[in-house]
Amino acid sequence: MHPYHQQILDQIIQKSGKATQHTFLDRYLGNSHPRYAINTPSLRAVAKSWMREHQSELSVKEFCLLISSLIEGESSTEKIAGTMLLDYAPRSLWQFDPSFFDQWLSHLQGWAEVDALCTGAYSASAIPENFTKWKKLLVTFSKNKMIEKRRASLVLLCSPLSKVNDTSLLEIAFKNINLLKSEKEILITKAISWVLRSAIKHYKKEVALFVKQNSDSLPKIAVRETLMKLKTGKKTKSKEN
Image (cartoon, rainbow, N blue to C red; front, side):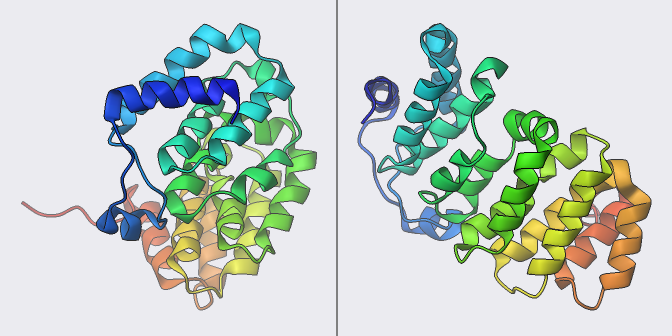
């Protein structure tokens, strides 16, 4: 365990107590890792405060070692704390090889942990800025036997697609969707829906045409939610009062 990992874990324990497991949450979040009884805003406060106080002490290498230590930790709470540090770190600490994501994803399970790592400030900025390296990695993930990495090949593109107008991002999104659209697992079908809906902001016509041309082969939920988002701006119909 990295020494800074222990500092962060001590703060988590101070605010929550002993880590436990919950059958209902296990099913919902898609993993069986123990969790500490700390809510997301409080965990974010721990990560944000720690990063603000210690960022000047970290090199890029040390920062990656710390994230690795947390993500390889026993609890889901530690893993997600590691992903939060990535969002709160200054951009100077983002200058690491994207291949670290391959290592980190190997220690995550289920949609909640994967999405915590793959969406947010880092992916929105770093992927478009270093797309040459990321493109190869995203395609590699889409063919990986680990479903979490296949999901990552899609959800890593959600934030960039909604923030940046760059057709290179859309091309790789469509390519990965075509590779994965026959899968039936909800981790993939919902991810396809999410990435298509994220692309609507900058590529509405392209998404509409893609869904029309592939409606018979795309997951039904992706077609339904994307068409609804194209029509109404929301993925589902509003409930009438």
